[in-house]
Length: 144
Image (cartoon, rainbow, N blue to C red; front, side):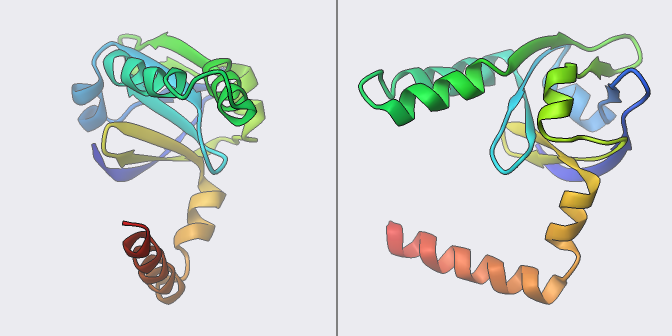
């Protein structure tokens, strides 16, 4: 999944999933707490693979245990309604301080849900964004 879409939560914390994403997700999805103050939306199959990778990290490390607790403990299976909406759990909305304005970003096998102001801050300065991308690419290249 790729692209980004601005959207709004309604008063009941329902979020309409763009048609392009709905076609790839299906009717049952899993929403979970993600990295960088986001929510992550995956197909059940993709979530099962993701959660298995967390579980495979084992219980011997406190970091692995805590990561599993935080992510899996804040994950919920949801069903899209006839209008293509999901009802985001209030605890997740509160956890990332999600307001009405959101941005959905396709990131491969998942969709990130960002507070709009967070996404705008990240992408508002194109020259800074390009510089950051170059720095990240160089660091990743050193790691491989």
